[in-house]
Length: 72
Image 1 (cartoon, helix red, strand yellow):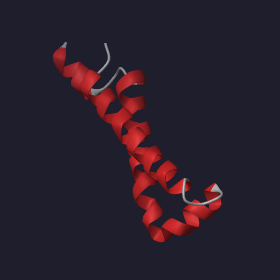
Image 2 (cartoon, rainbow, N blue to C red):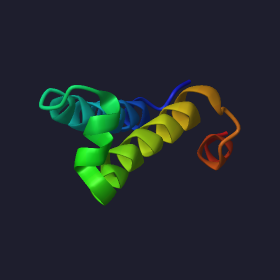
Image 3 (cartoon, rainbow, N blue to C red):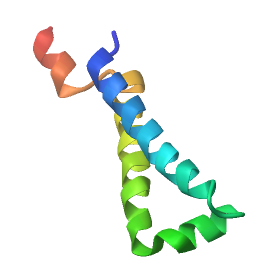
Image 4 (cartoon, rainbow, N blue to C red):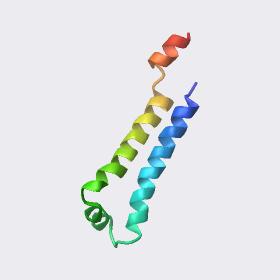
């Protein structure tokens, strides 16, 4: 069993974070210039990416969650 809604939310967060960086990367020549152009605001797309990865790993690979233990 996998958590479909949690997997979907994780994938959407991951795509949003990567998409924000790629959209900005279209206006600059390199990834380092993109990060410099964001300044401190780069934390927002990175947080989207981190939350998306954590959510995907939790929903796809960790089967011993409290949610699953309550259902049994």
